[in-house]
Image 1 (tube, rainbow, N blue to C red):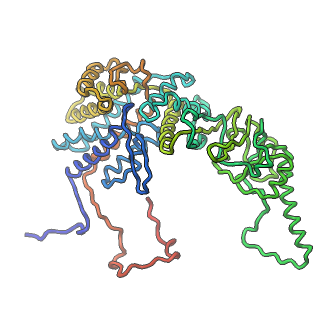
Image 2 (tube, one colour; image 1 turned 135 degrees about the vertical axis):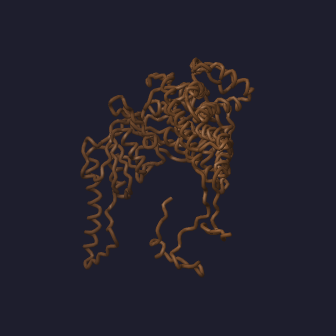
Image 3 (cartoon, rainbow, N blue to C red; image 1 turned 90 degrees about the vertical axis):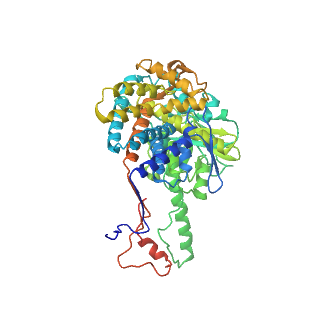
Length: 556
């Protein structure tokens, strides 16, 4: 007998073969089960406590998974899915996980019959192509200008969220905000940059009904000298600066030795004149409001006060960009480069209001605002955070529709249509791939099934009835009304989904399932490589600050 050969170190753990695949599938199913109940309008909320004792109450799939700390590698990659979904299209974070989990679940049976994973993956990819083709077939184009349709759409997106009880409120906010910031790129394309130009300000207090979209921007600042400067200006002329209005400091420490006492006065006078010049250059344009991102000295403040100009200092760069977009001003880097065209005149009103116990500056009633602020009010911080998450989703959906104005039925109708079409097609597929293909078709039913489960209706009956309705690929718009669990026509209920949300969901889910199925080996416990010959370090070495920089930073 030969002695056994040790290839891997003792510290390494290696699992391989079907064991790994089953473990991965189990892990993915566990993740899917965590958020399965958060799908649909009758969804449950999850409450998550983090290490610091903060609470998150939400039913946004991505927000839940973001807070979870998982050990299993396959489960971690499931979490990545919902993050991608959230960043790409903003909605459908829960569906993508549920779908991927289901895809893996139906694959388990084939692995048990010792099918090769690549066969299953091939069948899945074929199913994906056909599914997208079906989506193209049943999608119906809409008019982005038609507000009622848009409202129905955004409402069906947030119908599944916590704020659905506030009716059209959030949907209105989302549509207002996204239509404001939309920029035409020509050729009928519209670009909507939610992150940059829509700011969500959460202010606890008041009621949710007080939330609104401002035709302009607001920020958490007061004027520099509240007593002397005007706090309410109608049709203000606004100048935005990116430079400090104070005396230039030396780059590094500068020492000046003065011999005569008069020189000291000359120095002081120079400083004063420098600032006076700065202010004069600005006042020449007769602005009513000067906003700078940097500091503003007392002296400059005094000169501006004398000319009746209100000033705000130390504003965030992002806020400054938003103001520029809203009132049509140009951010100027040096006062001597000011031109008449840089002055923003688009705003109708500047005023400072006290909300709660803080002062907020509003620049509102803009003529053609390309940026806006959504003002959210609510009872508690947790509530506001949840409303903000829902608003993000709603705005993403509105953005998707503006970008790609096509609709699909919601309420599980799309998935059922796809499923029925794939089932029909599977009979024409030859060879061993037929079965996994059919299984993928069945997996799509996970979404309507989960919807039915969350409504608390008889799942089996509902599903059979639905499958019967969809059997020949006709009435593609029949689905489950998520509130009552009744089978209805989605067109009448106005339950719609955006085309690219659904397409992205299917793609992400199937690709991820294929990836996880292909894993057949997990080697864990890999240590960082040590230099050859270097044994274990004898005693812990204390790093000094000098060493800290020289260490290579490992990429995340």
